[in-house]
Amino acid sequence: MEIRKMAAAAVLLAGFMTPAAAMGVFRRPTPSHPARRVIVVRRPRAMASPVLIAGRPHGAIDLDVAPRETLVWVDGTLRGKCDDFDGVPSKLYLLPGIHTLELKTPAGEEHREKLRIVAGQEINLCLSPE
Image (cartoon, rainbow, N blue to C red; front, top):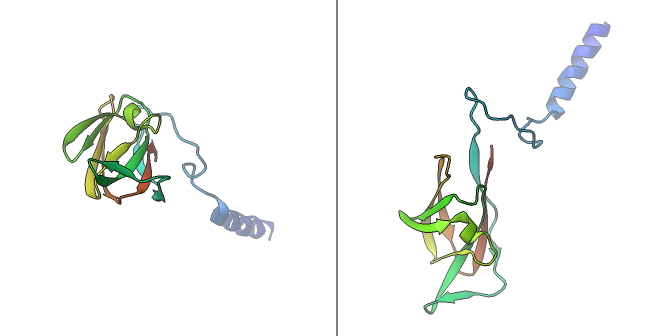
């Protein structure tokens, strides 16, 4: 009877357990298990003041990416390093519409994401472990 109670308790507890990634615990990368990273796009928010470049309203992307030397490509054009667009002093300003953002780390990782840019809104984008 005691074994049944313990098994029932284990089943109940299993429903409340979360994966290690959800708790912020990550394995160190090894040759057999390389580190995996994903792009996380946070909900757009209104900018404090509209940004006009050449008389046209733009949207913005604030990049929170490590390493800072990661290259940023927008629609196939190199725009710079992530350090240039980390919010201090500047962000990546784009015309409204759908753009393909590609990040290439110095280690050779490539990450691609399609983003809808809206004039007067800012998106915070992170490259984080999965």
